[in-house]
Length: 152
Image 1 (cartoon, helix red, strand yellow):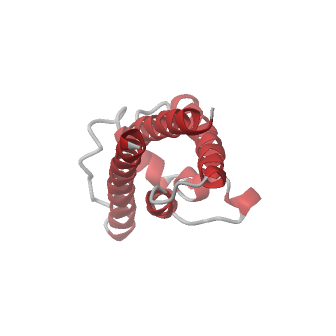
Image 2 (cartoon, rainbow, N blue to C red):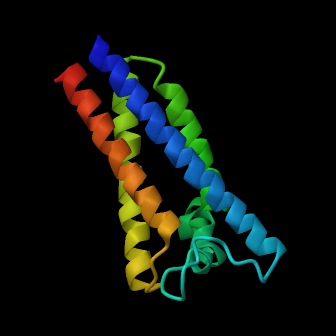
């Protein structure tokens, strides 16, 4: 039982980290719309720049707005995702764990897609994006570990 609590605690911390980065991403995106001269902390140089990605069509709806009709900023989608995931960690139901694992797997595939775009379309390194990919991979590993421990 102690392990279940520690896993839930780790999942909550991962969600808080993801939420913090998502809020920062949303803040930067809003500031970039307000002020064309704004230079965020994540813009280190011309090859390491988050504003290039946030200003692009891929900064809203993950670049899939034509397919999904979701046109919200990626940071806003991330905020909703991490808040819902955080709330779901308070329940220990098998079906919920399976849903968490499926959703986490699908969003990890989305991270692979976005990482591919970052490398081969933008030729850029977005520190915020890479941090979210790291956090999401960590989330996936923890959810998979939780599923295996509880149900296998």
